[in-house]
Image 1 (cartoon, one colour):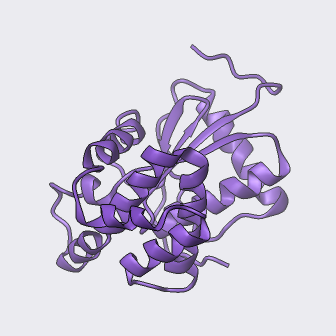
Image 2 (cartoon, one colour; image 1 turned 180 degrees about the vertical axis):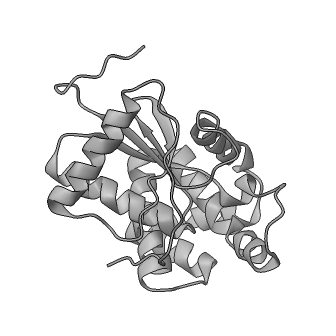
Length: 207
């Protein structure tokens, strides 16, 4: 068992799908924490398509995640061929366009995000092939298996302990960001903690 102390640098993996607004907010919160405190932060790829493949979900949501399958494959190509820093840059560029700017042309988003992140334009060709599907599935499984398939995204791994959440509708800033992180880390350090939840009553905002 990993011993976590106040002097240990927290290891934080945030599993994200470019389409998920709640993962976007959680990822921006994690960056806010990392800007104020030493954190070993890595963004990794999961897949809303794979998560919901065998679930009974509304037709409009099914169509939405089907439409985003291409950008998920491009993200998988970036992560597999260029590593976590490149994936983080691609994800930030893509997420800004999708969530802050409301762009739903996911192939155009992927193309622009590759350019902004300084990545090869040819990676967009992954959108139309299954060449990176196995890599995507492995990354998805690594993120979801420790927390269970009956949950969703965002998925946060803190010091080796996985959670669904935190589900936030605003991006915590400054001291708020640190207080929430300290709470998450404290819960992660207690081996018998499993779940907190309440009904969500507002939509996400990304400012």
